[in-house]
Length: 198
Image (cartoon, rainbow, N blue to C red; front, top):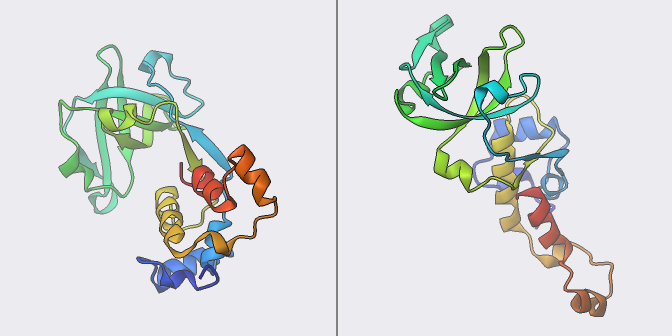
């Protein structure tokens, strides 16, 4: 079944299929062979003052100001956060929905990079609840080659969905069965699941 079109995957319409084709992904097999280009470690949060502002940072902070909307069509969300020592400005683009989901006085984990224009502004960070992020610390997130119209989270969900369409017969195993059994090695399909959708 892995040679069927990606359009057979739930949630993949004509537009998404068009985006995937730009990455030479036309079939379920192509999607499964779209391996991560690197892995991002879920690191423990740091204080604002200790963050390396030239790299991606992980900061635990509390929202001190209600989300306000600005820019064209009021789609840019801005706020301020603090770790109770230092204060940062935070900005998200095309994210007016955040005004209804992020609350003043609540704490979150913010993962992202500082603006090149201002080293005191965290630009479009990913947001996690504290409980959600703490469960991920020490694990790794696969990062994929992308194209306009598909972000990393969407690609990860698509690949997870693709595994529903395959079984062990779809991949040829080259090692002798006795050898695999002796060393308890995983089949290729299990390895794919392990390393592609951690």
